[in-house]
Amino acid sequence: MPKRRRSGNIGPAGLVAMLTDQLVATRKREHRLTVLTALAIVAAVTCVTLSSCTAVSAQGDPAPSTADAPAGIPSTATRGARSGPPGAADGVLPDHTSAFDTSLPGVANLDPALRKAVQQAEQTMKEDGITMQVTTGWRSKKYQQELLDKAVRKYRSKKKALEFVSTPDESHHVTGHAVDIGPTAADDWLIRKGNRFGLCQTLSNERWHFELVTTPGGTCPPMTKTAS
Image 1 (cartoon, helix red, strand yellow):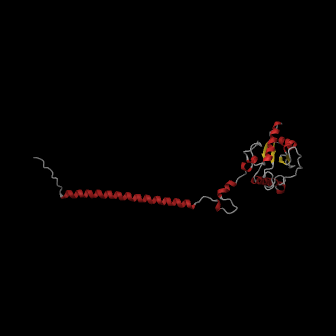
Image 2 (tube, rainbow, N blue to C red):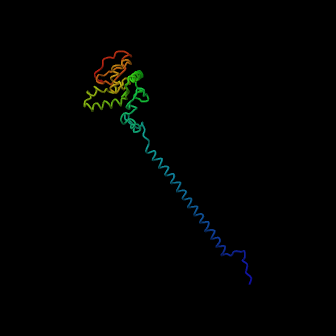
């Protein structure tokens, strides 16, 4: 028996089924769009909230400022730079420092005339087989004050300490007009021949302390007994 061809017409039941499928598919798409939109909104709100919190946190913890510090008291931004023991910038010199080591503040900040005289003495002394070193030259007030404080602790008396260490306002090291020389052989040489360059021992209790206090070849003036 020959097969019966299907008619091109869709019955009511088929039409209903087709419309139902299309409706379901449409609602699924709408649902997905709704979910994606909601997620996008949540992400945007979260991003804005985090940005606001970060900004508030940054504003609530400002960087230290010198303007916030009371007058006369270093701020936290600069206090650390002023603390600690004296260093090279204050005039502290390493062992075996030459008068020609002008990269060091302790030598560079000496009075130019004094520095030149000490350099000439160093060169001449070397010809006599003696190696000279500058043990200390220019000092900052901070460095000088530390030395005075140490002397007070050592002698347990400020009066006694001042016999050996001047105050920052009176020290010739602070003004760059004094040098301490070593070793002992160099001190002895300068005591005998330093006046050739205008250099003289100026403190009777410090054979290593020299200043430019006369003209080259002149006579050294009497020494003082103490640093003060």
